[in-house]
Image 1 (cartoon, rainbow, N blue to C red):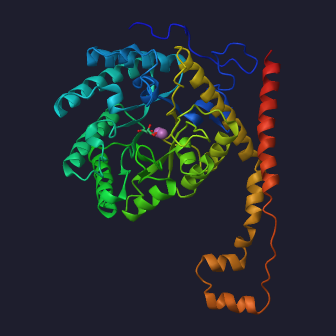
Image 2 (cartoon, rainbow, N blue to C red):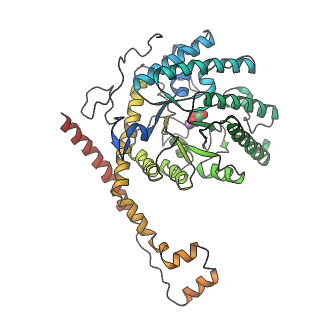
Image 3 (tube, protein in one colour):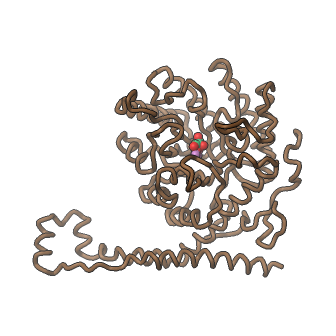
Length: 455
Ligand code: XLS
Ligand code: NI
Ligand code: NI
């Protein structure tokens, strides 16, 4: 056993219930609790991310890292440091009791002086991670490649004006995909990174679109060639790091994929904060993906409504997550996807235990939101009002329109005959909003009653 890093937490974090005075317990998350016939853990499929939680030091544009992450110190042997980072990470996953983790290739293995050296580093660290996974039972939700950190990708990876950069990125994704397969990953993620532009004055949009489509086609081809069974996921984001990112939001990505015949190969990995940045609600992005059959997985961080950048905070709004989960449950739930915490501590959160508090709060928020969403589904009142609103479409008129049977000529004739005279009806928005709040308050008081009964 390697050196213990999180020595302030000696045991696994357990369910303590609402009355628990111990901040290092789950207040709501109870992995074995059955919700709509399924274990809570299997509904949520929570994953911890290497990137923000272990690979970043807490630097921002005004200052260097603040976090106590000794494996990031300068002058260490890069592979020894990479091993300590994974040791600490797996100690954390195990103590937190989560079923999954996620990584970028460069999060777990240092970039070497040559491509061959980077490849060898990755190979070695993938084997090292595999041993930790076997030992702990923690599984891989997704792997991905970092195609944005190195200066060679300053003008993009797949959409770089230089085909040599395209080739380099392809080689890197090939290895990251193969590594994900080796670790039995449930999905592989592509976030655009620097696929976008800073100024149109130097950018050939049509050419870059062709390049990106080619790249995504090659990824899908290689997935099939190696027999990777997981889903390929694209993560939309409207801007940052580039002024405009091609994968702006769910609908834009869906349109792009459909335009290039790739919508059967990819699903969406939706990040709450990216929805905020796109001027959408998280609810909208999830609902769009579910409605179009494009839903895959969730990056569960939240943004800040005053800041225009990706603040990647841990989720803490039950309402926001409950609305998203309501759509996910109605769509049949998560299959290979999960909820990963692509979220980071604030720069002043310096204690080792802060990483626990952040994840415990985020996981409890998901758990409470799941209870609310499950109630909304079970009670069915919101669905009934929605169905009522569309009831006309099940009548003869609605059916003949949708089946293509009725032309404009037919419709004009019917209206002119005077037997069509629509009357506006209420959209009942306030009533529906009250019903959501009622579920939130009910779930809260039920949890309180559970806690009292347990005493
Ligand atoms: C950055 C993205 C990134 C992806 C994985 O904003 O959220 O973290 O999730 O590359
Ligand atoms: Ni993000
Ligand atoms: Ni993300």
